[in-house]
Length: 395
Image (cartoon, rainbow, N blue to C red):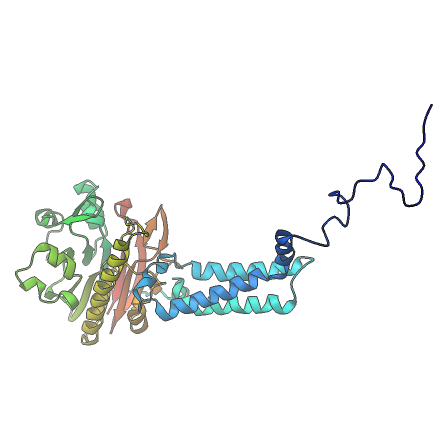
């Protein structure tokens, strides 16, 4: 016999869930907990707007302090192209966000776009993009001077000697500006001099060979004078150890005769700014950064003072250990012409990390009555982590 339960007024059906059951509409949605309250607030926060204006502030800080305050050496390690990639990405996200059904108000979107564009414009000189190549016309005549500048990475210590010297000689330059004439132990922790003068004379017959510390200049043109300048001036004539010469002699000036003209060529290797092998959690890294920054600034100041007193046509080239994003080159880039404007690359990256040349650390500058005809970056058979700068000039 089937029994029926009659539900009267005020009685609860046995099929209804008990009060407070999770599926009940009023079981807590009107009284959200702290986690749900935070989740409900998230859509109201304009994260893109915040990110854009935070990036703009970072760009302004970078422009104000890079090259002037040593702690900036750490953030300045970033690839220069981030100063173009980040604002362009922010603009793209802001514009495509207008297609969403829950798009933010127009004023939020367009103020974010305005902030990203401002960051792009202000940081453009830090990107390393070489717009000058689009407006360079190659000269019709033959150049007067061919120069190669290259950081050899410990004088090609991991390479067969014959291959090393043959690779350099194959460039057939009038003048070679070479850095790191030394050998190393413990992955660069210890450096020592090398003696390769006999090999240089063998592979470069007829060239004048000038060696100062770790810098080597080879010239098949007549040499008028050669000396260390800037912070290392005078070290070559003192009774100094090779380590002192290595530490101080970072700019070698060589004056050569090109036809009836004299040209000054500066072979440069600015000290590295940071030792990536040290832990960022220890104080030694930051003490070394501060010390290296003092050495770097002394070399830059000495070079700039020297150039201000030189009225000859001038080429300054080498490994500056300074990317386009770093303010250390502010003066040289402001008063001299960049030889890379005569090249064919919008981003002439010269130093590779994991095979990607995302940094330009090697530069060539001109002043006076000399013009860059051609400029290119050469991998030099992969012997070094730096690529060589191959240049030709007209006087």
